[in-house]
Length: 162
Image 1 (cartoon, one colour):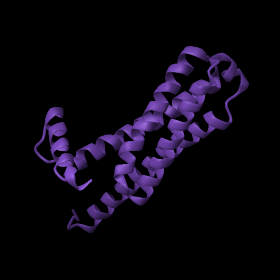
Image 2: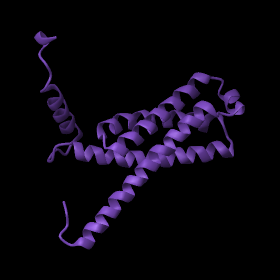
Image 3: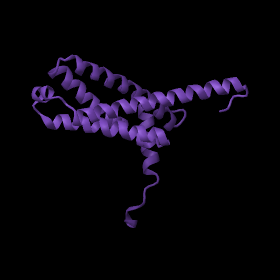
Image 4: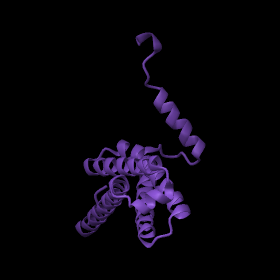
């Protein structure tokens, strides 16, 4: 919707651009934290956790979610963002649980704060995408799920064509 007043339209465009930049920063922070977990985890943290697979898991999830979400937001592929937000969130939750239970260092808590802020930014974007991708008039979660399933299964190829 374009406002008739040019000043209102300029203000709306500035807000949209600002939100776009905030989203990109949140995705970038998540990707950087994932990369740092994969390649720059300190030996102290590795000794405390004793499970290198967990570090690889949370790092890969955060890196894939952050990098993929960044690319999706940059080029406008919102479906990619929806999927990879969940990946980044899963990595962030693993990171938060392990850091809070195993490591009590200042650097780890600063990184945890950055992950939490990026998580909140990505959650805001996820909610925005849910609003834009649902049908108007659907109010409850079950109505939205039913609509999604109807829409998804309405256009599948019949089994005889496989």
